[in-house]
Structures are given as C-alpha cells and as structure tokens.
Length: 204
Ligand code: SAH
Ligand code: MG
Image (cartoon, rainbow, N blue to C red; front, side, top):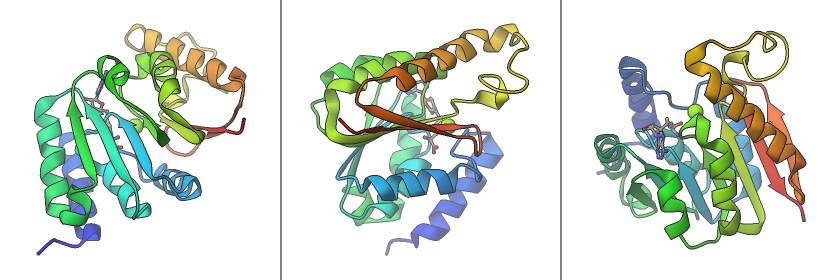
C-alpha cells in the first residue's frame, strides 16, 4: 500500500536536509502552493527535479495534473522516480522524469503546459525563459525559484559586486528579471519569501 503523501514529503525534507539538496525552502513553500493552486494546471513542466519534492507538492495540489520534470543528473532522477513510486500509483502515473540538460530537451518537447516551474541552473534562466515560450498555453503561469539569490540580485545589499563564484549567476538572474518584467503579454510578481520567486502570468 502506498505510504501517506504527508509522511513521504516529510521524509524527503529530512533527506534533502541531510544531503544538502536545495529543495523548495519552507518559507517558499506557501508561495509555491498558492501559485500552483491559482494556476489550476493540467500539464506541468518542471526544470530541475532534484529528488522530486516540488513535483510531488505540485501533483498533490492539482489532482488532475500530470508533470514532465527534467533532471540532468541520472542518479538524482532515479531517486526522484523512487519517491514517485512510493507515493503510489496515483502519483507515479502522473509523473514523467526526463534525464538530460533542460536546454537540450526543451526543443524536443511538444506543448502545451499551463504551469512551468523553473528551478535548474540559475545562470541559464534567460535561456529557459526563451526555451519554454513555444510550450505555453494562452493562460500559462511561469514560476522561477531563487531569483533573488541570497539577496544579491536586487534591493538592499545587492549593490555590492557579488563574489566571483556567484557573479555570472547573479548577472543572469538580474537579466531574467529584466526580461520577464518587460515581456509583452505577461504580468510578473516577485515574492521575496525564501530565496525569491518570480511568478509570471500570461494575460494576453
Ligand atoms: N525543484 C526541486 C529542486 C531542484 S534543485 C525542488 O524544489 O524540490 C536543482 C536541480 O536542477 C538539481 O538536481 C540539478 O541537478 C538540476 N539541474 C541543474 N542544471 C540543470 C540543467 N541545465 N538541466 C536539468 N537539470 C539541471
Ligand atoms: Mg530552488
């Protein structure tokens, strides 16, 4: 019999803590859940599966939805599949994990997704934004996690030139925010909770 999803999610939180897997933070969770609920998606696309935590949350929040989620690390993808299996048939059957670089796999997908969660390589966010455009439904919502990366992207404290190892990432996240704010037909809100989440709703 399938374990309860609540117990499994808690186990995943402990697993991620012990191995420092950067899953959705506790602070960002309510923002994520509200965003998924409001989008009421049928087809979800996720870039950056990790162990499948945000994917399971999204599926729990939208019982009718299926998810395609992309993970570049094969072993991590296997771990996610294991958790989906343990969540039970109702979850496993609705989740497809693709292994590879999101930027390479996006052009091979066919639409239409009404919710996209961008949570893979932060320095690729501008490319991911462009890559998902052909896959969006007319009422799609695109959420991007960690866009304020440790407060280095915008606002107080962000005037300091970020240290070398973060520089490209921070510059690309700034570029991402510029792009989504200027994107015609989208309305973007930035939620500061956790590491910052940008939610762009198509309203064309
Ligand atoms: N969404 C997950 C956390 C994802 S962590 C959650 O909240 O539960 C980011 C993941 O993206 C890591 O597992 C990393 O291996 C993967 N990743 C990084 N760059 C990627 C890329 N270019 N394509 C696909 N996956 C990538
Ligand atoms: Mg994240």
